[in-house]
Length: 214
Image 1 (cartoon, rainbow, N blue to C red):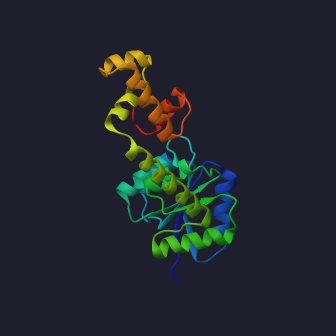
Image 2 (tube, rainbow, N blue to C red; image 1 turned 135 degrees about the vertical axis):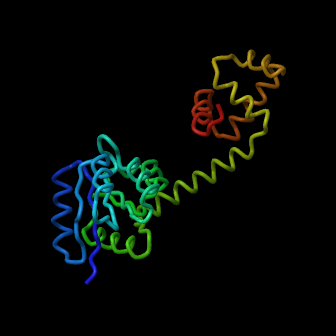
Image 3 (cartoon, rainbow, N blue to C red; image 1 turned 90 degrees about the vertical axis):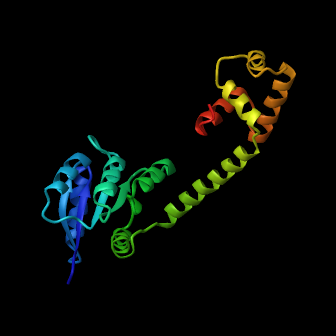
């Protein structure tokens, strides 16, 4: 019977050892590598006689974290599938791992059956996403669509105003820079505040920074 070669990359020794023991009890899998960080894992891969088919990758590690290590794997060994294992349910971390090339994302408090299901599915079909991940991705997608809609409503001169609003200039000084009257600038400000549903200049600056408008 063909077994799936697995690598574990996690700086928490108790967790990585517990994972290894649990996995090796199942004859369908073999743990062929176990490293405490991405740097040591990469070194191990480059001299390995056998490569893992699936890597269980911690996200937060010293020397080279899970995101950086997954990016390296995606570039150099794209056939190796990465499943992120983390305690972090932040959608920003989730998106960064998926963009790096991870094919699955599991929280470390998952049931063992979910882990084995994820390994099998990633190995056979290429990717595995739990309902938790799907909900996170849907939330991010909804926010992206909302933000895209907001940005599309802004006129070019309003975007220019926003850029100047990120500076230390007063509204009167912004009017001078844009060769407009202070009254017109007040109109731009009020219009932008309504379109973006923000209350003050600080909120405008935060929005601009988030969407690269500064």
